[in-house]
Length: 276
Image (cartoon, rainbow, N blue to C red; front, side, top):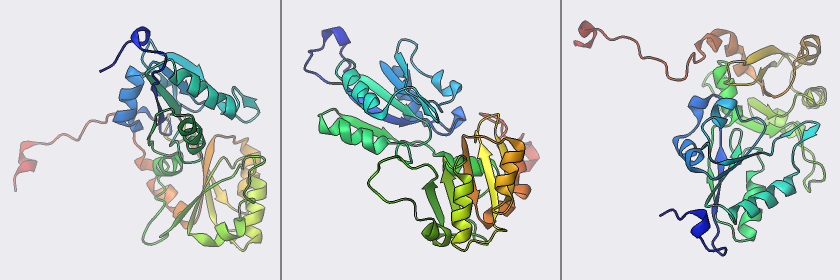
């Protein structure tokens, strides 16, 4: 049973929920995540969480923007983790709201490690990651029996000072038929150079999906040979997902099947159509 904050002992600790908000379309938010937003006392949210999902937050909850965008850091990672610890000692339900999925290039694992280390109860609520949803809304099936039986997800922007070596783009180039790159727009020239040097054909199809699943979603198509020039010509900017592989060829055929509404009405069924 929930105990009001003022009645709880200072020794009691709340719980932190790492909630994936999905890629932007509010219809893709999980029911569990939505329920937590509606009863949370504190919500610490990222920059890419859509306004429609922020509107689901309990109006009485404290809302804190901890968003990080290239060149504009609202809070450093260590400060965010410390904030979560402090808020969990003050409130029963603290939601750490992340775009996409907390564990897919979302630093959710790092935050969970730190919370567990100091004895803060924590639970992850998965979300639909942009690397799956954005291509789907662009009509690109990441796997297809005629084109691709494997997918690699990779970051195009690596953290400074990390202990692991740089992404092995040569292994990525030959590791699967479809490559999905997060946060790669700013490093696109380097990524293209690395993949082609590793032997990937310059004619390999590429599509960039910006603001995937949102009403403002847009795509830019090309090949490894042309995509950097196309980005420069159109001033195409992040945030975007990069999809590389022959499945991209289905984009022109299937892109018209994009969802058109949050809760689409089913087609009308006439009595005669139900007869067998």
